Amino acid sequence: MRLPVPAPQALLRGAGRPALPGDFNGDGIVGLDDFFLFSDNFGLKQGDETYDPLFDLSDNAIVDLDDFFLFGDNFGLSAGKPVVGAQAPGPQALHLEKGAETPDLLEIAPYWTGQDPLRGWMLSLEFEPQVLAFRQFRPRAAEAPLPFIVESEPGRLVFAAGLSRGQTAFDGDMGVLVFDRLTPDRSALRANGAIGYRAGSAATLTPPAPLELSALPQTFALFAAHPNPFNPETVLPFYLPVQSPVRLRVYDLLGRPVRTLVEDALAAGFHRRPWRGLDDQGRAVGSGLYLVEMRAGDWRQIRKVMLLK
Image (cartoon, rainbow, N blue to C red; front, side):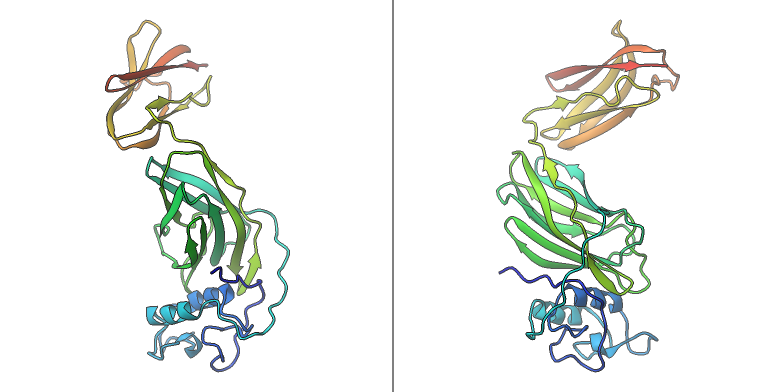
């Protein structure tokens, strides 16, 4: 069953306990507005200046996981009251970026570029269930938010995260959504809805652009350097279908080694190594054409790069 996502509106607390537990703003539905209000108050306990028993659903004098589970039980329930219309979305400021990508795993990093930082967000994603399956949310390194899986079914994920009072607002890094990659096939991940919460109010956001997923190579691959020609630095991307010892080395046109960029066992997946036009002794090399060789077992590939000064 697909749970209704309430239209964004101002979040106002009423006096006393709501008739529908979890309907903190009194709009007749336990929805994302209420989740963001709940996350604002998560962790507060009786005696704290801003503690509000409205959010202590379990009556244990602290807004904790017991209350969160009770809230989750009621999420999506409606008292039959109308919900106000949605606000028009603003300019696109919520984006999706690919993180780590291996034959078995894909990381998607939502990030925020809006003028005002967010205190909560919701993202609705659709994808091909034969290619991807949601595994987990990995929060940002500092001050992890309260995560809430609104809906997770094959091919669809509705996920929300909210911050408690005192935590630093989302400004850029919003955490990482981790998916199992089930096949190497080409695919796409599409956002069909987004909500942001700040200053006590939730608003519809312009969903991020679709994220195209290229088919994974079936063998080792050394991709074209970029930029090329370059000065002062170029990046060499490469891919390993399995964990393997790899050597990535730069040669001059006479076949003499110039710089060893990698000589180690690496995990399967995509990798990148920069070359800043220096040799193994850290000395700048001259302008001209260079050869980059990648070796993995018996496999070998060469690319050309041009250093301009």
